[in-house]
Image (cartoon, rainbow over all chains, first blue to last red; front, top):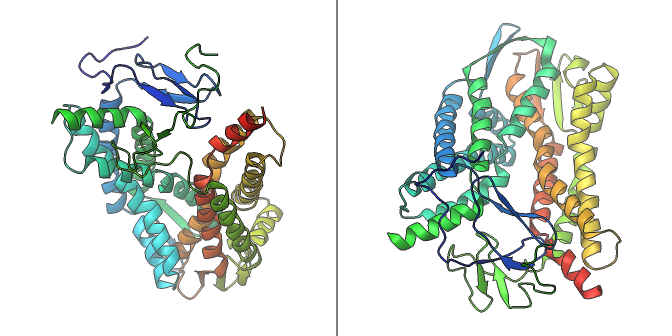
Length: 217
Length: 214
C-alpha cells in the first residue's frame, strides 16, 4: 500500500535524468519512482535511490524530536552512582570533562565531537534544511549545511556511546548503587529519532529538492 | 538486466563525473558540482594510495593500542572492576571478564576492539589488491566486503567510550580512581584512520579493473 502525499512529490529539475551508479559507474536512466519504490543499478544490482514515503514530514518530525530529546539528554544526567559515600553523575559533558581533567585532551575533544557536535549538526541541520523544503523554499546556507550533514553522518556515534554505557554498567555492576536518570531515556530516544530522521529521506531526493527550491526562490 | 543499460555505457567513458556529495552527473570539464559546489572527480583522487597509507598508519597505531594499558586503575584493586591495580590492556580486560564469567562483556569487547579492526584492515587490503588485479573474488563479494567494512567501522569506538564513562564514574573518593591509559588515544586513532581509509576507497575501481580484463 503506497499512501501518496499529493502536495509533496519528489520534484526533479529535468524530465529525463541519468544516473551513474556510485559502485560500478554504469550510466543509466534515472526513472521517477512512486513512494516506497527503489531503483537498483542494472549492472551491479546496488540500490541507487529510494523514494521514501512521506520523506520530508518524517525528516522534520524526527529531527525536531531528536533536538527536543537532545536538550533533555544534556539537561539531566544518565545515572547517578553512590559508593563509599560519594555521589557521581554521568552525562555526555561529564565524561568528556573527566577525560579533560585527567589530561587526555585529545580524547575529550574526540568524545565531544562524536557524541555532542556531530549529532547536534545532524539534527539541527536536517530541521533547518527540511522544514523550509516542505513549502518548497531553501533558506540561505542550505547547500553548505547539507554538505555538513553528509560530512558529520559517519562521525555521529551516540549509538556506540550507548553500547559503551551498557558495557561499563556490566563492568561496574555490583560495585556501587546505580540509579538511572531521565538523561538515559532521553539519550536512547535521540539515537532512535536521529536514525529515523536520517533514514527518512534519500540523499538524492534531498539534493533534488534543494536544487528545485533554489531555482524557484 | 535492465534494458536501459546498454553494455559498456559507463559515465567515465562519456566523460561524465558524478558528484561524490550529491550524486549529480556533470561533464568532467566542470570543476565544481553546479548543485552542491563540491570539487568533481571521475574517481576519488589517489584512492588506492590514500587507502593504503591510512591503513599502514592504522596498523602502526594498533600495536601500542594492544600492548599498552587502556586504563590505569589506582587504589584498592578489585579485579572485578576491569583489571587489578595498575594498567589493564584491552586483551587483559577481555581475559579477566572471560574468567570471571561475564561472557557477554568479554565477547562485545573482543569483537569491537580486536575482531572488527583486524577484519577491517584485512578486508580493505583485499579490496585494494583486488582493484589492482592481485586478488581473486567476484565484484559482488567485494561489494559486500566494502559495505560491511563501512557499516561496522564506527562500532570499534565502543572501547574508547567505555574508558570515558569509567573514568567519569569511578572516582570513589580515596578508594579507587581510573585514568585513561596511553592505549585509549592510540585505539581511537586506529578507529578514525580505518574509517578514513574506508572512505577514501573508491569501489568503482573494482569494476574498472574487471572491465579492463574482460
